[in-house]
Length: 159
View 1 (tube, helix red, strand yellow):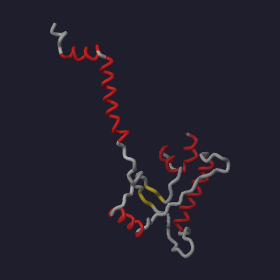
View 2 (cartoon, rainbow, N blue to C red; view 1 turned 180 degrees about the vertical axis):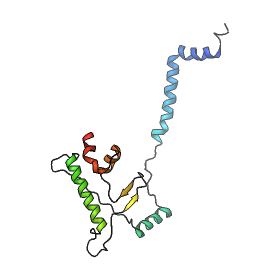
View 3 (cartoon, rainbow, N blue to C red; view 1 turned 120 degrees about the horizontal axis):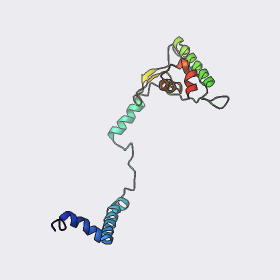
View 4 (cartoon, one colour; view 1 turned 90 degrees about the horizontal axis):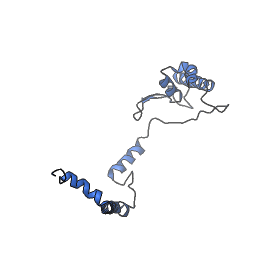
């Protein structure tokens, strides 16, 4: 008898016997909680660069101290249509090696620029990779396979 009137039994029996009122109350409370989300939503988006002294100072710094590294992106295109073949990637590797050789000899200087290496080596803070003058599709292929770029022919055959 004591089991029938326990608070646990009453808590389970109450919603079981009154399903429609319990579901109605839950729906009303849900709608009341959704109302502010739709009716009180902000109409304007926050600016990523709001006006202010700090952001104006950052703009002044960017204007006075330009980035010393200039990025020039290129696309790899194959004559046959598929750029991920061993032949295309080997040719690309050879051309990149030629670029590094020319840089070491100082042949990348144009016009009256001083003959010195111009390809920069730095660690990319976003992805944590050492960038050695260039970054190409050969780098992740070599890293994934645990091989050096000189074995790119066998590395591509795996894929």
